[in-house]
Length: 573
Ligand SMILES: [Zn+2]
Ligand SMILES: [Zn+2]
Image (cartoon, rainbow, N blue to C red; front, side, top):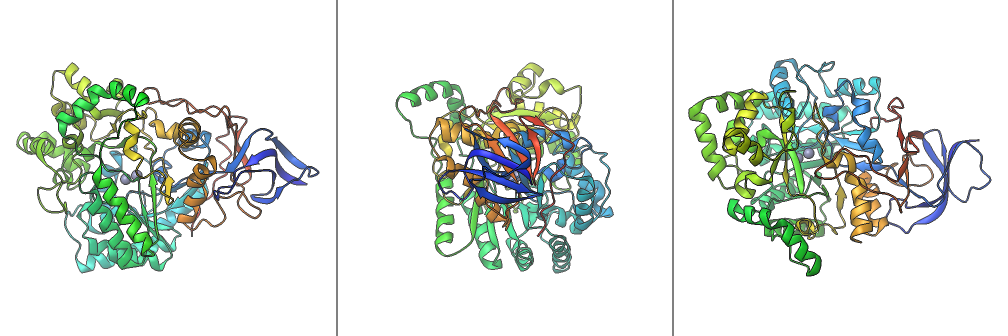
């Protein structure tokens, strides 16, 4: 007798191939048959008549390893499971919680704090291997794919040093990276606009990517600039992949268009009008030549035989830590050092000058340069607070910085700087516009790219709710991009969220519904599936997503989440 039978559904198998009617049989943690199995008997049968059956969704770009350290992690990830995510790739953007050597511990605690990690979380490991053992002992609600994080390895070896590495330090980093890879990491990530990754010379990353490649891993990069220098930054990532022989994954592909405050404010004010006109006469999107140039670089590299994948967050919004709103030099030494600088009136004046004036130059490791000055590129109006650490400021969450500043009788810079100090750096923010058809055109030049997967890149604040992507990212792909816009065929959309992502990290037995593959499955109703998480009111689970199966175990049962199932595995190499 079978353990589980998903009966009567339409299977979209994750390969991009046409949907077909089939039953799916599961024994233990494997799919053992896909086809007409009307005579089969099973301990549990799910009636999927009229429903769609797809592989478990893979969030190719997550930071869930950071949040897995929280005591409430099983409940915390409910929004992920409820949107059908059964696997997440963790350790992205150069951030991680391993390795964590004693000598760098204070610096690391101060650094993760800005991502919403409680400062007193209990640390029970030092190496990547020990972290993996700890994860396995505790159990995971979904599968985790670990990546080694360059920023963490650099901090472990060089502490808070903000300069190029010496040959001895590079040797130390290579050794640590090799340990991470031997512990089963499937790649290495960089975050080259964050401290300390941004101080790494291209050559340092090439040498490390060689170690990654020797162990069969891929190089995932949050590149060295997400605004005006994006094309050059993508070129650098391609150079690193070419010189090291390492396959490349370009993380959260986007480039903030450089509008300047005045133009940004006009667009902000006219948003509603522009969306209305666009409904009648399709308007061109905000021109973004650097994004086009970057994709051209990718296509040339692909034609030359380089292994390149990309992923995108399906919102015209991003979320990150408040430290990113201050120039790189202000972040040298980590979050505590930043706070000290913001408290000193003269240094604060210099920071303000840079925020108001610095335009991106390449490369940004030169003194006085900055690749991603979002305020200068897009103006203050696009910024709102996602989360803060303290209870007393809870009411600022979800509100725009300009409104909060006005109410406090301050200008936006002073308001934000004071809030950063008060919250000891524990502030995350959202930047961008509410997702609407016209503003979304910013992506249309890339969304059909065959190598493009979907990632949610969700931050889970210590208090309060994660952003929209945490609740609805993948449901939005089906609800909005497939059903509403007709932008993707269902089969293509599912491939970008499953099979394609699995192939990027060598997950040969995931991402596809076929006999012999891992039993990660999602059953949903195509007619009723609905992303209920909105920009203004994100905390709503989707409709129509009925069953989620992780390694053969039903973890969302007719819409109800089972936090105790802990059916995930650590998918090491
Ligand atoms: Zn990133
Ligand atoms: Zn990220």
